[in-house]
Image (cartoon, rainbow, N blue to C red; front, side, top):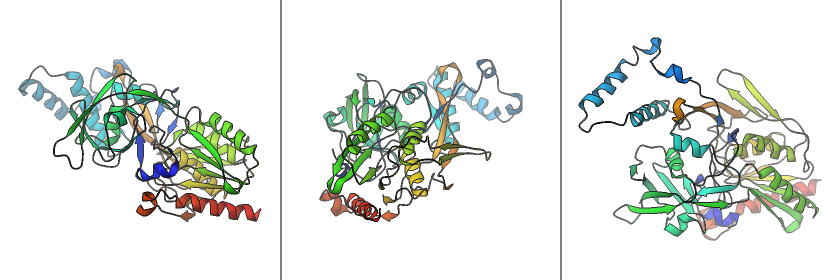
Length: 418
């Protein structure tokens, strides 16, 4: 499915319900579909358990007074609740979940063992899941579109379907991102989705068997006027090598310029974003990582760029997030490439996964934010394109792509100036 068709599916931030396999590392970004292909991952840095098992046997002395109401509530439900015995593990996990939710940051939450295992097994380009693009900004996890040929399509899921329960558990009050992760799972396993659909009086139920889907993260082709078009869908394990292969083919045709399409690219690995950005700039800072205590780390270009001289124009939209914003922000700050499209998503925060003792999952906590080379904050703001071009309903209905048209126009102007 090409980019213009994908854009018709919706211009909301989408996420793909897929699972991949990768070595634990730094991740960047809410994954959003770019060319009807990719999965979603949230920024995180895996970490060792922060509390040793021997420290979990008692409430610390300085917190005993604060936690008196908690233990009172614990005793009340164990002594008074009508249906006994209670599942103490479920109560413990629920308490952690409630504490994390009370922080008030949608990117900070508790990950139960299954969700944690799933979240740390993604981004190789081979995905296991139901195969659907979803929106996580609504009240419920909402289907944007099932992927063609996917289990989600075969089951009959449709755009606009709201997932109100998963495996019989009501999702009311559960963050859509957490619900999305509950849908993830190994190929061959089943998940039952209860769906609210417009026009249907009663909820619909779907039992879907997850499957493996293999997807390329970089594609490319030559356009008219000797322009190379490169579409990067995510920043995964294979993205750098796939980009090299695409550039081998395109650069051999002596293009006059490159259009880099990052629309609906949700992000991926931090190191991959640095590697990809280094392809297009010779040197300099690519991003800063700013911590709450004022300290920061910086990441610089690797100095091995192979497309540092050709004019470039970058396409972005509201689905361009995190690692794609790192790339686009660096190219914009260095006047290396103008941006065309609409303001990006604004996902510029880093989460760390803190595994909990006893294999009880992990606490996912926001620990830092990204800054562009010019020290612009990305998180909650996004990047403003140099040329604001929106897609109208009429454009979508007629499969037109005025953003790409404008990018070609701008690039031809840059080529003429050389």
